[in-house]
Image 1: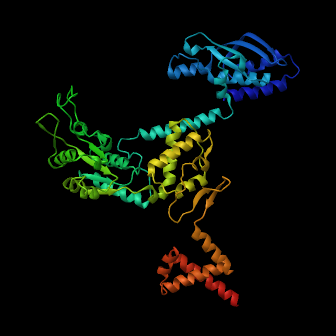
Image 2: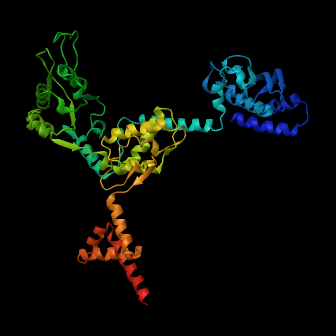
Image 3: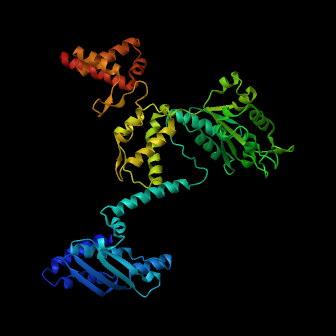
Length: 504
C-alpha cells in the first residue's frame, strides 16, 4: 500500500517539478511525507544520477506514526516496523529513478532508539534483495491476504466446540441414511459395527459417533488391528505387567484402559486372532479385562466401535472369526456407502479438501474447473474417499499459484473406469482429451436421426407411448419418463394445443 502511494506521488513530483534540479525535485517526496503527517524526514546522504541509474540515500526519520502506533498496540519490538513508510520510500524513489530502489530500516524507534534510520539503494545491490522484491509485486498483498483468510477460516473451523462433527460432509440420501443411524446409536451405549469398502471413511463415522455421544468429553482411541503383530496384540489391547514376557521391563497400560470413559475404535476387527477375539468377547459381556501376567480383573467403562471391510459371516463359516463374537458385535451394524453412491456429495467434499490441502501446502487455488469436476463425478472411485483425497492433494501440488485445478492434473490417475451408464473422459489416439459416450447412446442417436423426425415430433411420440404403456395412468407415465405428473400434463396439453392450431 505504501509502495503504491509513493509511486503516485513520484508521478506528481515529476510533472510539477519538471526541469528543476533532480535532487530538488526528488525532495518533493519527503516533503509530502511530512505534510501528510507520516514522519519528519532529515537527509543524511543522497547521491543520485537518473541517467546512470545510480542512487545512494540515507535518511533519519523522527516521529514515525507507524512506529508509535505499533508500540501503543503491541509494546516495544525487536525488529523494525515502519513497513508502510518503507513501502512509500521505495515506491517513490523507484518511480522517480525509473528503476527498483529498495529502502531498508536499519534503526527503528519502536526498538528503543530515538529515531528511525533508513538506507536506500538499487535492488540488485542488496544481497537479499530478491527476498524483499516479492512484497512489492502487484498482487502480493491481495494474494497473501487471500491465503491468510483461507487459512484462518480453516483453522477457526478446526477450533470450534469439540462436539462439532469432524470431517462429515454430505447431503446424498446414502450418506444421510448412515449418518442418521450414527445419531441414533449415539444416544445409547450400544456396540456398533461399521462395515463398508476400504477408504469409505469408517473412522470418521466412528469419531462422529463418539463426538455426538455422552462420552464426547472422554478419549477416543483408534486401533488398527491389522497393523498389530500377533504376539503383541494382547499386551497392546489389555496391557501387561512388568516381567509378563521377555522385554516387559515396566507395567504397560493397554488401549482398553486408556479409553476409560470414552470410545475404543477397533478397525479391521476381522484380522484379530481367535485368542484375542475371545478376550474381547469377555470385555463385551463382563466389562472387565486382565493384563498379561496379572490375575487381577479390572473393570473398564468403554464403548466399543468396530469396523471391517470383510464379510464377517463368511469369516465365521471359514472358522476365522468366532460366531459368538460376531453376534455380539452385530447388534447395531451400520453400512458406510461407497463414494460411487454419494456422487452429489463430491462437489462439497472437493471444496472442503481444496481448503484443507491449500492451507497444508501453502497454496492459493482459485478452485476446480467444471470439466475436472465432471470427470470426478463420473469416475467409479474404487478407492473411495481416500482416493479422492489423494487426487485433490496431488492436483493442488501440481496447480500453479492462484490458478484452477484442471482435468489434465487428474488424467493420469483416473484409470478410465466410470460408473455404469455414464460417459467418461478419455484420450484420443493423438493424446488429446475428449469426452466419450457409451456405445448405446451413439446407436440410439443414429436410430433417431435416421427417422427424420423433429424434436417436437419425437417428444410427442414418447409422451403418447408412455401414456399408452401405462394404460392411461398419467402418474405411471410420468414415472416412466422421469417427470412429475404436472410436468407431463403440461407437455400433453401443449402438444394438443399445437395440434389444434395446425388443423385450423
